[in-house]
Image: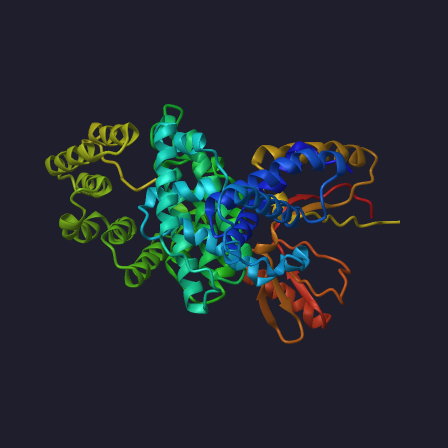
Length: 420
Length: 121
């Protein structure tokens, strides 16, 4: 049986995190691990179409990559001093059957370590995302640069610097204990959600280039879920992203302007993603261990389950935001709860929640946009105008500014504001 | 004689397909589906969501666990398609079935695609 290029491509993509994770454990060097994997992929492209794909492509790539890197170390050893055997560590298992060990928890820790290394706390969030996309997802520097709207050489430098920082930091290679593993999983989950938000916050012309980030985030979440299939927060994170991503096509109109949740054409929502998201949140809820992702996914699920905007269970959403506020107090969460409160108890009650947030959220676009909308409903037009003007000054994109301008235009005939 | 054809593949790889790759495979399958349908040979066909969406109810102990049923000593003997509101209701159906037919387990796996096919009864 011969393997076609699309199949090989998918096999290599899916093998990548496990293979690089294992190679990193052998060589304890990201550059060597990446180079070894690259080499193995080139050999796969030569060998698999002729000989057919191996029974276990991941094991094949790890084995071939490791041998090629050991050859490289030996070649270099002719001109430089031979490295200490410990430097190319973990060769003790060279004789054991790799395929048998792929199900081992060992490999779970390899992948988790690789993901964890990418979100090293010394790195700023944008670098964490860039490194993860480069190393774990295997996106090209060009693709990542396009998604971040920077030049290719600037992105190349950013990734190189981040990798140097990671290499200099001491990354523990021993098997993490349960507590440390839980911490790593949480850090990795946060990084995955950052990747998603980086893509989801895109508007207008940048939307296509950045949609790729949402796909990658979902892929990384699925990977985490395969490693930790009974972890409710990972189920929830995957559900949350699927449910949000399902609305992608309805969030902007043909002109690239923002369409609010209330006004979105729900027939444009991706039913397939919604169904999978609902299946996962259902599973997570059964664990009765609500975490921040679970509550956020439950909110997204209530929006997804409402057939029309009018069917939305705002009272339940308000309760969920209150639960999130207790678990993770933040002014942004309170602002979101105010949206639900405005639907249930009216604009006055919502404004009472929003006004005290001025100190914390004075520099936040949505705060002023929300305030303006509430004031507009209360017919306090002059104050609404002032709030909308502040929002425009803080808009992060032309679509956001255009949206507020359209609110300003309707100042006399009412309207509502909610985050799309 | 009716036959069931059970589909197996490397889940990691299939889940790594891009939307375009997935659509391309489904389009090729649709050609085969259509032929079988025209020949009145195609019964219900379905595609399941990934194993991470699966929940398993062990009937005897009423134990609900995450993930697919992977007990190799027992074989897949049949399947139901039920239209339920959520996982809770699905588990209730599974429990009712389990009372009628105890032993073993039911795996609840959401469907991704469902084609009822021709009436071959």
